[in-house]
Length: 305
Length: 280
Ligand SMILES: [Zn+2]
Ligand SMILES: [Zn+2]
Ligand SMILES: [Zn+2]
Image (cartoon, rainbow over all chains, first blue to last red; front, side):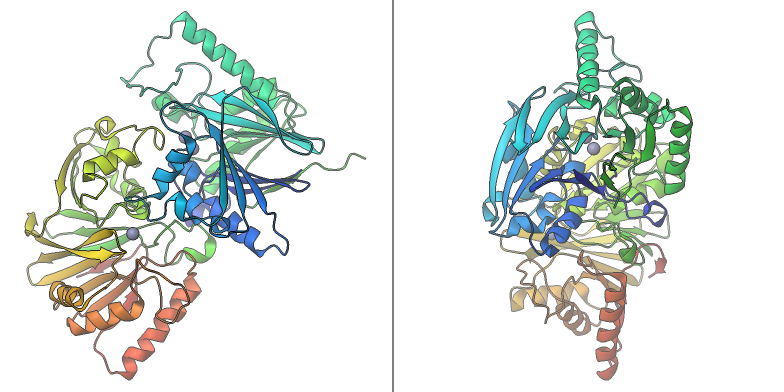
């Protein structure tokens, strides 16, 4: 399993000099296992990934895009992904099944007038949409298995585990912690303090927390929402993001080898991310490595001696 | 008037090191008047950077007021709107002008942008700042001491954009982006709107001889020809193509400046860049 990170930022892309080390593009990760080429999310980093794919002498013809959810920061790169304009490309797109709209319609509307002048029908690539639920597992390619889980995020989102004999990656870019608020499909009216959670909601949160730990269990790498500082979380728990400390709790409980802080706040400078990472490194239990994900980061399992 | 660019890139943000001198955030330009009026042109991701800068003033206390003029609702011109803290701060007031589209009114389009599939904000009603939406038309209107006049132009086959001329006393600037000049009449309209402007901010993502086929945008040559015909003093190329690096913009600018010098044209040519404040 070879991984390359093309976008680490959350909410919206930021072009500022003091953020270029960790990067200003929104979430996108490339995962290669043998001939299987998986793209995690279609944030603005996908544009650069597309350019890189087009320059490969023998680029993969079949691409598999797993979308956690369709917030703009996770789909913005799609219309600027060069392979969708090539008839050589076959693209399978996976995302959450919803009653409100099909995945295809949601992506099509994002690409159509009056937001963009493109639309799915004008694309040359052949596209297939696969709507999946949380808590499902399936084989995506030879020896490549995907599992999904529900994250605690407005309008619900997915986290993904990719497992192969050469590595396990778990990808959870957007989630709040599994307490304080339970996000569903309805807008949560925030009145300055968390709404009362009844027993059923508390049980649901606990089930989601356990499912998240199972999803990440034994991962080589866990990319996890670390957008907020503790102070931001206290003020904005209703936006559905978490802190590095909350990411660490899940990583430690799941026995992850390396936690990669991810979905950086659009205001966070490189120097601030350095400092936040150092704090978590000092707190990490033995055997858990912590780093902050940066644009251009490459991950693969080191050969065991 | 003072003009400051917060986003100059077209299509999609380009947050990479070789784009930062001109800037990699999408369209957003702030114009301030002598009496403290604030008029903002488009709300691409540069709008988030502007919001961060404004938070230390009245917008941080819920006492800010701005006029936001939207050229059209393509993502690179509105994506930044829902994010800045100033939008979620009760008391701030946003007068928003822009076109309705064939797919719905301006508010319907903004609600679509914020709908739960795409945004945790869900809808305009969850935005705490006061918003007054106005469908743009060609009647001049005032923002304090600034007079604003708008005019529609084509952008591809199905879409229009609105250009804005802002006048304070003897000085005028024109903002026009994502235009494609499809007829002589439209060129005549442009020359009338641009006439004798001190500053023309004009999208020009392509050069005429570039192989890129584009049906939605004009080229640098169009902008220069019309600016010269209208007697514009200074032309600011804007909405840089996402593939254009800083060095390439430098080269492009030098190329056209040489041509203008050979023609002994009085037109001053610049490329829009995030940061510096320009006096008009
Ligand atoms: Zn996100
Ligand atoms: Zn999200
Ligand atoms: Zn446009």
